[in-house]
Length: 324
Ligand SMILES: N[C@@H](CCC(=O)N[C@@H](CS)C(=O)NCC(=O)O)C(=O)O
Image (cartoon, rainbow, N blue to C red):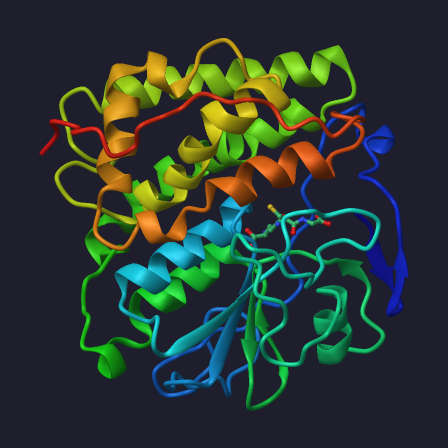
């Protein structure tokens, strides 16, 4: 774990002193958009036209933010158009690495570089900032298009439709405001809420985060009592943004991040909904439970100094869900 300062690697853990023990996630630095015609998107520069084989996705199977992008790559039939490299699950003093393993870590299939930080300095030699995944890479211009997952999934949702012929829309125009409202609460209290609980270094910061987390899980369980998906009958990006956190909750966050008031299997609607989403064609292939469990327990020395990997519940995500 560390960050780049003027292109040089510094091995430092998250600093929570300045924020009263709270974990504060930094914002992503590359915010360009792939568009069908190469015109500029809502932020960043233009010149990133959708094309088959031009773009590459660097992911960690452990990372919930990267997981969203893998799901959209599957659902939008982009697997033969956007190549991927998957990092090693252990994130230690060198940050994410391209070591290979037998469980899905591929190495850097583009440049054969040793560390993910080398991808950032390849894009910008004097770069400062955290070295995060996912990274959407442009092979033609040899630079990073975006390292912000919420924007990468919106590009995947529509920018390649002419190439793939897949016009399934997970961010329909008429539902955007309502989706945003759910996304905002789910991001703050659930997706990021588990990290705020787990990385808190004061009781107050932990109490605040974990209280909001379970209040929002209760709210979601009630919401899902009489509708199949978060926005009703239609599957949208709101569901795909929540799902990666639900998949990791019982095996990792419950114990490792002290999110232990309840498990997802204790919520009848949320648990059936998690299985429903998991059983959506293409999605199971994006889940690598080995990398998920290994990454958190092995990488976060401040939380689990002896790096013991716990036994974990044997969850059956394939069990019939009875929804829809
Ligand atoms: N805003 C980013 C956040 C990505 C992120 O924080 N990824 C984590 C892995 S789960 C990471 O790479 N952390 C390394 C670090 O913070 O140094 C996104 O959603 O794409």
